[in-house]
Length: 186
Ligand SMILES: N[C@@H](CCC(=O)N[C@@H](CS)C(=O)NCC(=O)O)C(=O)O
Image (cartoon, rainbow, N blue to C red):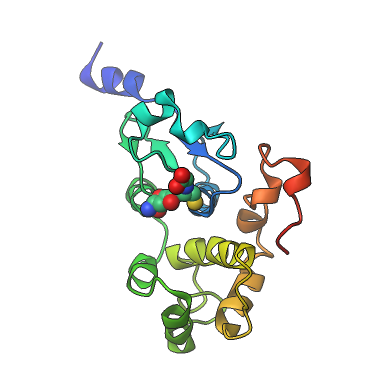
């Protein structure tokens, strides 16, 4: 076996550990869908405390979701680190990442969007900031945040939700979403 063959045989399908109800998992689901990355998903039942189990804690000592195993077997436990890895391994995005890191709260992000946004967060291109914005709105609505002071965020979120990458990865469209949990947040 040559070195190249050995390396190829060591590569595996990446694995995402996800929960339908985890907004940070949703960020990664969008990135994987956007980049068309073939992978397996393992659904972790957060309501049942499966993320606190011994088996999951061995994989991710932070006991949080998501967790991602790359094709070379590296374990990544932070959603933005996973998205950064995906962007390095499968590059195609403008660099919106720094915008969502620098403006992590809705008020500062809303203000930044006055000048930054077009159709999406960074002009008309899709960026990592969009991957973060849509799940952020879902989490905000779940916590009954009044979205009226955030017209830019609301407009961009509504536009993004017309795209299959965002719709198909929505919590309610996940196989682990129980029927009675669907439709709670509009
Ligand atoms: N900084 C982490 C945060 C992950 C996180 O807080 N995940 C939540 C779900 S959205 C979680 O696992 N919560 C379970 C708990 O805290 O017990 C990331 O971006 O991946």
